[in-house]
Amino acid sequence: MMKYLIINSGSSSIKYQVIEIPTETVLATGLVERIGEGSGRLKNIAFPGSDRELTTVIEQPIADHSQGMMLVIAVLTDQEKGVIADTAEISAVGHRVVHGGEDFRRSTLITPEVISVLEQNIPLAPLHNPANLDGIRVAREMFPAVPQVAVFDTAFHQTMPRRAYLYAVPYRLYEQYRVRRYGFHGTSHRFVAGECARLLEKPLDACNLITVHLGNGCSMTAIENGRSIDTSLGMTPLEGLVMGTRSGDVDPALHLFLKQNIGLELEEIDTLLNKESGLKGLCGMNDMRDIHSAAAAGDERAALALEVQTYRNRKYIGAYMAVLGRVDAIVFTAGIGENDPVTRAESLKGLDVFGVRLDPEKNNEHAGQARCISRAESTVRIFVIPTNEELAIAREIADLTSE
Ligand code: ADP
Image 1: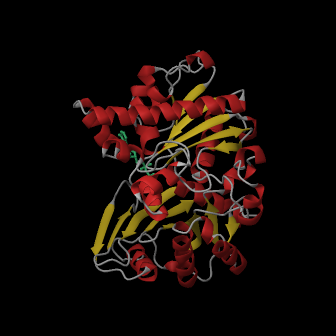
Image 2 (image 1 turned 90 degrees about the vertical axis):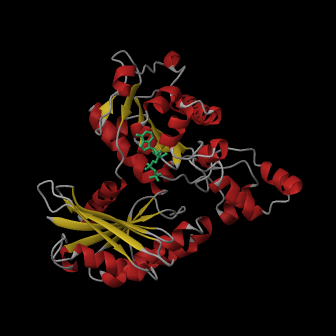
Image 3 (image 1 turned 45 degrees about the vertical axis):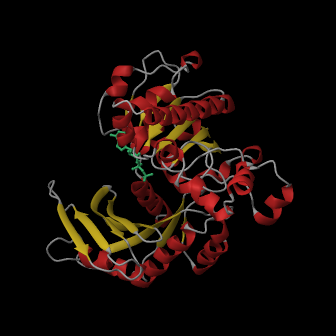
C-alpha cells in the first residue's frame, strides 16, 4: 500500500489530498488559503475509515508556502485527527503544474533540470508557474527522500497537429517565442476520456470523443483515437468557451478599441477579460447556481448569460464534430458539466441532425457517479463523468514510479 501527497499550489493557496494506492482511497483532503495575507486559514478533512470524517480548521497568519506546508504536515500527522504517523509514510508527492510548454508531453519525475525548464517556462504562465514552483521547492525540502512528480495541464494536448495549434500570425513569433495554442485542463480531459473508454468498453486509442469541461474555467477537447487533436483554451487559459469570469473568444482587435476609446492600459484589459468578463461580465454573477435562481426569478441578463454560454458550447461541439468526423461520445464534466442539466440540454440543442439524442429523463437525474444520458438510438453517446484531477495525478505517479 502506498500513500501519495498530491499538491496544487497557487499563488496564495495550497490544495492537497493524501491518496492511498492501489485502493484509490482519499485519506485526507484540504486547503490552505490566504497565504501571505493577514489572516491565513487551513481546513483539513480526514477520512480515517468506516465513513468517519474529521474536520480541522486552523486560523492564523501563514507567512509563506513553507509555513503553509508545515501546517499541512502537522494536521496530517496529528495524533488524534491525522492519517499518517509521520512524513516517512508518504511514498511520493505529485504536483499539478499548469504550463509545461512544449517541453513536457507527459508527466515527469522532478529533477533540478526539470525545475530549470519550468523556470524557463514562467513567461508562458507568469501567474501560475511561479506558484507551482513554490510548492515544488517546499515539498522537496520537506520530503527530500521521495520521488516528486510534475503533472502538467498542457501535456495531454501536446499531440495536437500544427494546423490546430498554430495561430495565423507571423511564423517567427512561434519560432522565437513559442506563441501557439497549448490548451489546459489536460489532466481532466484525459481522465474523463479514460473513464469514458471504460464505459464504452473500447480501448481508449480506438475512441473519438468530445470532452466538455465546464467549471469556473471551461474548455472543450476533440480527442481522436485517444489523443487530443484540438482544444479550446489557447496560449493562455482565456480563449474559447464563455467561463465564470473569463471572456473566451473575442475579437483580438478589442484590445486596441478599449485602449483608444476608453484609455485602458493593456494590463487593465487583461484583468477585464480574465476577471470581469464571462458569465460575470454579462450578468454580474459567476456561480451557475445563482445564475439559475436569478433567471428563474425573471432576471433577463442571467438568462442571457446562460444563452450566450450554451450557444458558444454548441458552436464548439459542432466544430469538433466536423474536425473528428466519427464521434463515439460527448462527455460533460466539472462543476457545471456534472451538475447542471439545463446547460447540458441547451449545449446539445439542435444537434439531433448529427445523431446526438439526449434522454431528458436521464439528463435530469441527480447522481454523483458516471452515467450515460443519451437515448438508446443516439449514434453519439452522451455521458456525465465526474472529473478527479487528484486521482489522475496519483495514477500518473503510480505509472511513473513503477517504470
Ligand atoms: P473549478 O474550475 O474552480 O474547479 P468547479 O468545477 O468546482 O470549478 O465548478 C464550479 C462551477 O460549478 C460553479 O459555476 C458552480 O456554480 C457550478 N455548480 C456546482 N454545483 C452546481 C449545481 N448543482 N448546479 C449548477 N451548477 C453547479
